[in-house]
Length: 592
Image 1: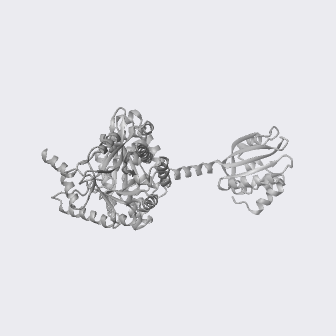
Image 2 (image 1 turned 180 degrees about the vertical axis):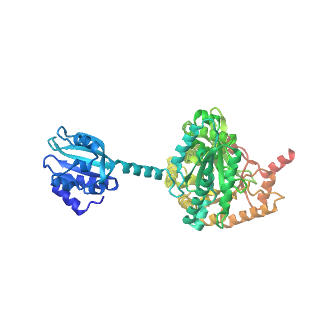
Image 3 (image 1 turned 120 degrees about the vertical axis):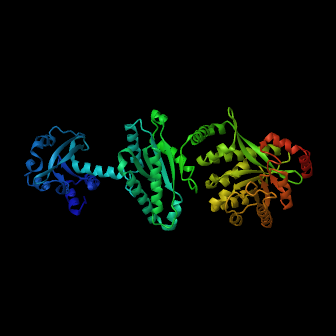
């Protein structure tokens, strides 16, 4: 209801108290959007205020009837409810702080009635005596209708009018519990490159596509609605739960895929599907629906943006991978606290002389029971959950501590490079943290370099530019790592300040049979020199590669042909040994 000037005047005439006026006005405004109105009776002034909204909700004009002392319960309440209402409004035994409620049928028209819930609270004055009673009348029938409408809206996705995720979880849980012996398929799907569709055709067209998919899913599910559930999860993500019949699963996938191809848009739209089939273990352990959906999502990730396959089933391979990842996640913090992560160093050297000119700090997980865990097993997991940032800082700190020890021992120290993960780029405090760590151990800045992967250059140039610039301003060397493994590095070389280019030989293998690769590699080395960049080729594994690299003017390398990653103690021994020149290594090759 709207509180007009007349309503406010009535409030002022009933109560001279500013507090009571404000309270009534506030309570009236709260009731604006409900099917309710209020009545207040003051025991001291004998005045009764009736909310003007009363005339919109129930029959008659109660304020006028009270003013003229002619209120008639028979015109207000159904005859059968009059005794209960009269008892309810008997305030003779009412005390301050008391409250009560009742339900009764009130006339809304001369001969029509609806159920109302009536509740009152008795308030006290400063002395603790009862002063006034506030009564709220709420139309229970319309309130219930509003609740039903609200529940309906809360259960639906507003764009597609499909069930939303919360509703889907509840319905699917109930369906699975009702049919405990039935195996179900959870199918999770979304549109490949949907973000590009929104960018090219606008979000309005994107919304139309989502509605279209929703209609097609509901169209398919119509005949089997009692044995299946479906929903829109968010954005372009949809999910279906249905009986696990292989033929039916493929039928719905083909139906949706074909329907999407038929949509009138000049864009080759394709959906990726992940399928999980419930098993006896799920039924026995009553696996929750959200976990089943997660497994379907794990399967879907296997084919996301694949040009060949668009459907993947969750299987034992994915299961083992997830279990292994979970074990890694559960043990990673303890491993960091107990120094299970150890820094290994892989030397960088001059190929012709064999002299070590520096090294790269790598990390190995030395597990107390499993032994050495490969970085390929835990690094991707840490990159996903963000723990890689903590590990990177751990490696940086250990490296600084190691350099400090060598300096204190009077040993010759060569620069060590540490890796900066893509996750680290979004830490605005990273440059300060690096400076503080290096300062703590009083390490000369020229002895620490930072390797940024090429994939990070592609994903966020601005973040990288800011980081590289700040590092160089503080006299740290910046390296572009894995050059050649990505798709667009040349522009990054122009935009982002780097000092060293590390060329990944795995993606540009020089050999006598790969003339095009040789030409490309030669051109990259020549370009780097013209840009004033130092070049290090990583991944060198054969004498033939060494000789070719030397022939094109590349001098420095890192790879298994020279040194594998090694513990610090072994690296220290290598520094004490006499370097092997290329002629010596070539002769050793011939003697084998």
